[in-house]
Image 1 (cartoon, rainbow, N blue to C red):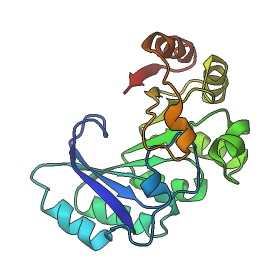
Image 2: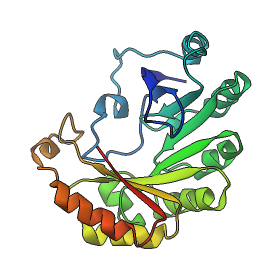
Image 3: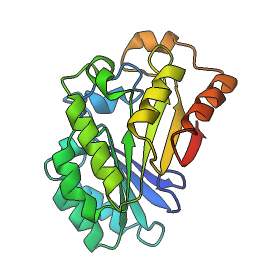
Length: 228
């Protein structure tokens, strides 16, 4: 495992839990609006730590937290992720995984051990190659979403409201794709440190426009949340 960062205490990343957040290095997507470019494309001299250091840090915090969030980057690119999750469960931690949905095979393997999963719904499935600037297929993200919706593992889908990519029509398409999902979140776009520097010039949607997106989403999802 290669981790590029840690947030020792979080009250918001794992619903109902006090958690530590671990950030894995590397991602197979190149979403232009992503604001974690140092994790998406890590440089050779970037600091990192392995699972041994992660376990040591977590053991020292067991009196403060009861859960671990694994995010990225894209965690499912790490071949040792299943054994790491197993180690967390053995130590008594609840585990949440954040994923882009590009690796349904690993997601299927992990699901029985996970307590919560958050999957990005970047856009309508047919637009993934264009929006993510990657060779991911529509089939892969559809399969991951289907696995989650058929599972008993608590989960949510989330979309970043990036202007020029996500608008009212796109939310309708996402809603049709994930119709009936229990939880859905629309996240505000942050024009800061973006993977594509041009997106730092993009003006985020005003609050009233975001609320309009939420109202569209409510037609398709049981619970809809607007997040900063």
